[in-house]
Length: 424
Image (cartoon, rainbow, N blue to C red; front, side, top):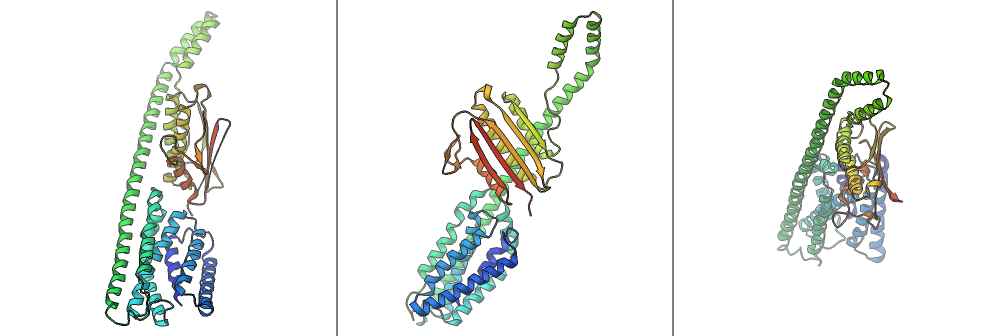
């Protein structure tokens, strides 16, 4: 009966990510219930035939359920594994509390202890329903700082090990009465500390994510301002060119009357060189146009030839907070590679279009000199040790909604192909 706690455990684990399921809720519920039933039967058979403690059966059962949980979600493994371990850590505290209240010690527990543990887990699941479907869900869907999840899993794992360590090992030790109260108080104290740690982590991660979003927004506003200044300069040049057009026609007419063909050609070449090279509109989508226009001016300033083919409409299924960081990182990496490439070989080609009404296809191709730093399938940064942050962010944003990201290189050409899918 102890393994029945997987029912409220899996329920509360799925609450924050119920919109990120790979399979339908009905199918998921049926498979989960079947797995829990098989674990209960297997544990009972192992106890009856081989006298194996339910404690040792619950560990591999939890590992299998954790793997099942991770593979049924369209969420990064760091996040999904952290959520599952967080639930295990809390339920382990409740397990020790149930042992202390009932006075029983080592598993297998009598029915009253197992039922008490199950009821306590159900009560906690009901109490955590709203935070799990709101605060926790919001934090899981926030992709500003993925690194915050790289260390969180250690906290519930530490409490899980600690609860296993302090669990009474000898039959009858709690029946004496005196150790029961400290055991109960210690279990609830650990539970309070763990939940408080979760709260601190949420506040810290939410604060870091908010700061990172503000940084991205400021960067985007800077790009928009630079794009706006570039457009104003181009408009002024065009107005000046239109103002001078009548003068140019008079000069050309005079040269034509003199039948001075060489003079006409020289004058046309001079006038053509004065035509502004700015782009008034690279794309109908304001966000993509701001980012592309900003980097177009940087490419022109650094002498990097480029070709932009941006067929994105005004409204996109992909939020600007996903599109802009991806496009910005790819264009920045292409510019850095161009600066390290022989001037005669520099070239950047960018294309973007909407596909099937809910996917944005991006492709950025650039030339490069030297070698691409890659280790164990991971692209390394050329500016610092470790994985390139830009490509890591691109990959994470692309894959969070079931998108796609692939980097190809060879013969001096690096190509990034990205598919961004609209949120479900």
